[in-house]
Image (tube, rainbow, N blue to C red; front, side, top):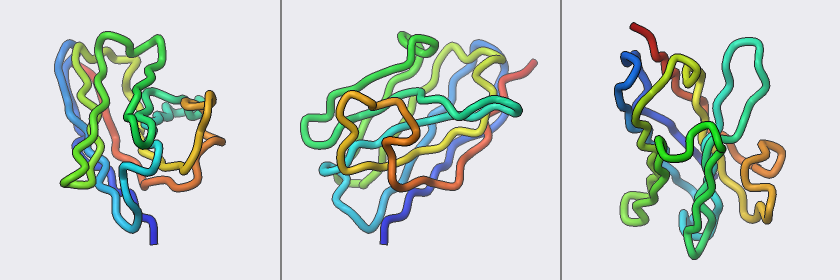
Amino acid sequence: QVQLVESGGGLVQPGGSLRLSCAASGFTLDNYAIGWFRQAPGKEREGVSCISGYVGSTSYADSVKGRFTISRDTAKSTVYLQMNSLRPEDTAVYYCAAAVWVGRRRLEPTSYDYWGQGTQVTVSS
């Protein structure tokens, strides 16, 4: 069965960095698009970044471009989200999700079929 497990969240000061991991099992990672999403209290879940299946092309929300980097380690069946220059507004629960096909709707939550349980990221001094 498909399973996604996030880790790496925590408390960090503004300007700091964190690396989130999404460990995948039950499917071939290269064949799926993997997205990172976040949800802050009282707000809707929003797409942060995506790496497509096969060629591994990447997409980012405007709010994180130049600060976040998504990558994939096929041997470890893990997708990472490197987050630099963190801001208080990045505070949220971060989720990874998987889909066989997302097309152009790469950062829309409704495009994804499988979800992890989430990991909390708090950016505060």
